[in-house]
Length: 229
Image (cartoon, rainbow, N blue to C red; front, side):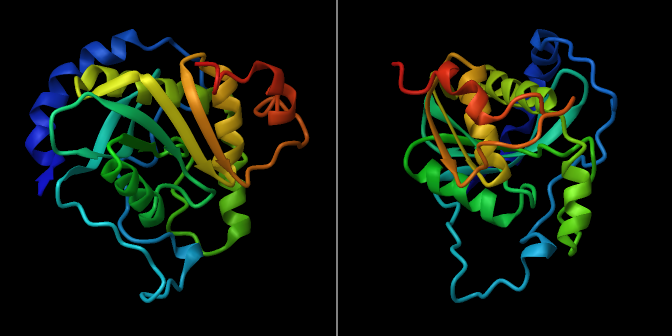
């Protein structure tokens, strides 16, 4: 198995230059409360039956945690891709409300086995760690603080990270997301004109608008880019 430890030096070489390419976005919080990914499944999803849990192996893959420079802080993400020479098409994987836990990591590994570079950024890194919370209402309080503008910017940063790695063909860009991430999939497919395909898993299409969530998928339907190329 090839791990990201063997590539950490190479990743570090472009981190500073990559951060300089990101647009400045004025977020109210400029520190990451979550700086590394947890292992296992989110506590709120427990118990997980060993008989039903899917576990995709890492043999033949480069799989593990990476750090993504964003407009204001560095956030953790899970990346998986084939071990061979790229460049590989890129799939952004957007978490459900539970964050980047074992299920989301496994989805990345499944996509990597199909020939993609899959990246799942920890989207709540500035707001708090939801993986250790067992009460869904406590999780919702953290998620409610996450602005859509921050999410779009962080996904842009993940794409920039993939491009700078030298292993990705970001012209072939897709996105998929689950529940909370399903809504994000719609929004990002309208936000980024380079998205070629988007698959939203049961994300909500409508909702109350606010300063942090000014639009919902139904509002951006006419602006969707996926499928144009």
